[in-house]
Image (cartoon, rainbow, N blue to C red; front, side, top):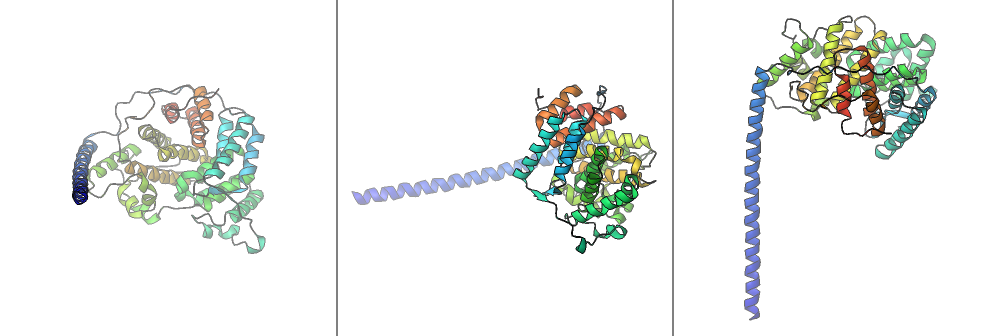
Length: 428
């Protein structure tokens, strides 16, 4: 009886194993079939997407959403902002994970959109605590006079992208500022940085623009030092090989339409946002995929077209990359008076290449505002939302959109800010 039971149990176990294996095999086959089906669907989508790229224009019939004039700039609580500067100067410009330190930028932006002294101080304290907890803030190393390698005459030789020599750069730039004045020093550095505007997702020029608002020599030196030691320049020989846009005006729109046609006909593996940094350092990609646009220092029409394009791409695909295309271009615009003749056009061209690379990695979409908010909310509500979010990027983006809305007509900056904060409830 026991033998029969044992054999019965063994048979049941074997049957169970066999059933399990059969089920696993069936599941594997089903998963394989599902993967094949999904791949086919994606190919179909890609085919139709490419077909649309060949036949469509860049912009859908978008209704005009005029900005309401923002309130006049607030009186900045200078003491609270300078306290943020003093605290930030104790640390390197990059965090433990390589992200950029936003403490002073967020403080200046919050003050400019109407944050009170207490709100600026609270944001600074929370920002530092959050950075320390999540990523770690690295103390700035001390520059030892007896081992200094960088001097004013050959500071360019030590430009790097790994954060080296940051304290030395701060000392060199600060001495230069004290001896030669703010305008001359900023112009000199910008002249060398026109092809590295995109470094660290445009944070060098963004921090410098906020340092100009704060009007602190120490923060200006820190901003330029952070750019010098997080510096990546486009390969010059490939920048010169780029094809010209084919339209009669050779404008931003002409160039983007060319990119859509090139993308539709391109058989190489497609790229996504995760590959942006790789392609920004790939001279062959830049030289073959990104058309030239005719920028000039005095051509406000092309600059305005670029502003509209970066905002419309954000409204179509809101993410951290497209957001910085808006804030980075605002920083260039704000610093225009410091550029030497010809340098501003070259810096705009660099920004265009960075923006166009992101556009390509997003599959060259039409501008249809698919993820935009339905309509803009008031600037007062946007400010309260930005403060309530506790997010440095939200605060800076509202500040950027308010500032640009005062100067540039017929671009939906208020709608862009509303889109960034559409899921945030206002404070107060």
